[in-house]
Length: 308
Image 1 (cartoon, rainbow, N blue to C red):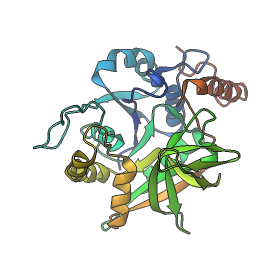
Image 2: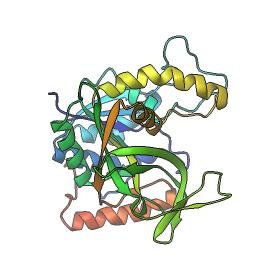
Image 3: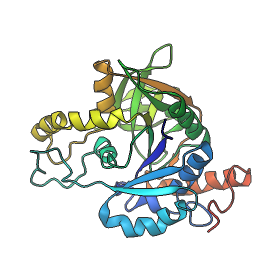
């Protein structure tokens, strides 16, 4: 069985943050959130990381992130391109936005041969999450009648910011810890000790208890996911080009939801009590810097992750 690979989605430009938030320094030696994720992944057992980026940011990304990460990992690059589409399909006029997280994963389809984990570049997940997903991928394989996937599940109360709304996949889980449903909510915000979401742009709100399990886009897949994603891409394009050709996105939760509905996949939710940190908004940075400073002072991380 091939060793799991880590796939880091870093092609987004961080429109709400206002710049390449993946490269924002949050550590004392110029380290970004990605550095801490790669460090945690290496300690968990991952040896190869594939960064999905835009080709035009390659030089800056290598200098800011990739060259340091290469001190501890085998680093590879995949490029998300708007025109990377199945045969017979073309980019519609006016479309500039990438096709979403599933499309970003597909950008690395030629570099992955076995199990792999997927994370966002701008989210801090914590060392326990990487250990859990690595252990799962190292011990599970697809069954003849059902794909065996996993998702690290966070509590929504640990994943919201004081400075605006966030997008999360709200999950339903059965008694055996398997994902039964996931709904992408693009407007979740803090509500006292709990959270709330709006499906109509803020006109009305519904409560989300703090313990509600949510996806932070930390998945564990077998290679079969890439095959399914590519085969189902035309169905997505057919729908989205009719509904929202300029901004519609092919989200990973939409693909997973479809596979669950068709009973083609089982997704084990791996509970995680870690507190999320991220720079969704520029105002989030001081909190992230302080949290990582405290973790470093407590001995969870060295001052200089890569010694450079």
